[in-house]
Image (cartoon, rainbow, N blue to C red):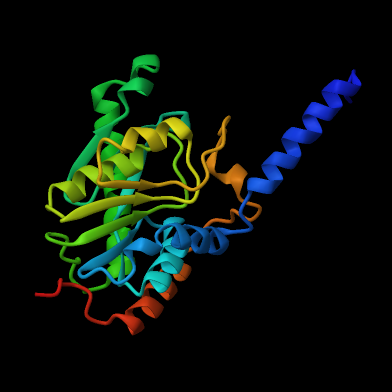
Amino acid sequence: MCRARSACGDRRRREARVNDIRYQDRVAAGRRLAGELAPYAGRPNLLVLALPRGGVPVAYEVAQALNAPLDIFLVRKLGVPGHEELAMGAIASGGIRVLNHEVLRHVHVPPAVIDAAAERELRELERRERAYRDDRPEPVIQGRTIILVDDGLATGSTMRAAVAAIHSQHPAQLVVAVPVAARETCAMFRGQVDDVVCPVTPDPFYAVGMWYLDFAQTTDDEVRGLLARARLRHPASAAPEA
């Protein structure tokens, strides 16, 4: 209960602001993000890459709107032992590992523990690679405009790992695109990629899930289904145009 009328009013205004910003679900977020990315529609050698699992329904809407092929790029967060929601780093396809040194300055984690966490997450990354891709080849990234999509950014550890791994494959352009992000995280990527699209950057941020009315976990079956539907529109997306 509020102890003062002004406090009650402030709380109601904060709650109203949060509700005005929130997305209904990842589909609605993807459609909003697609509108922000409209200048990229029709570009040659455009490829939308999603970070599974939550980034896939967002990226599907983006790919549909831009008439671009959709694929996945696998990244796994390395959680602090006992506080797994706090990212101490991430690993990505291609053997890339990125550590969050700001977190590690405050939480001492021995190198052996970090290595063990990376090994566990590598097994899950490989499982998802098999589950989502089957025997299809990984898409060619070199020389393409890549739009890298997730459902939101908090610390940005998983996205940083993905950015590092994709840069190593020499895209023509790399765009980070998310429906919602912490303002400082969104700003951090501006010096790392060619473009950053974050339509909503609330402050304070709290967590990605707070900015969705429906933030139910995306399942493996949903990921496979969306990728299959995307391949019907762009069956030959593994290689760029000449």
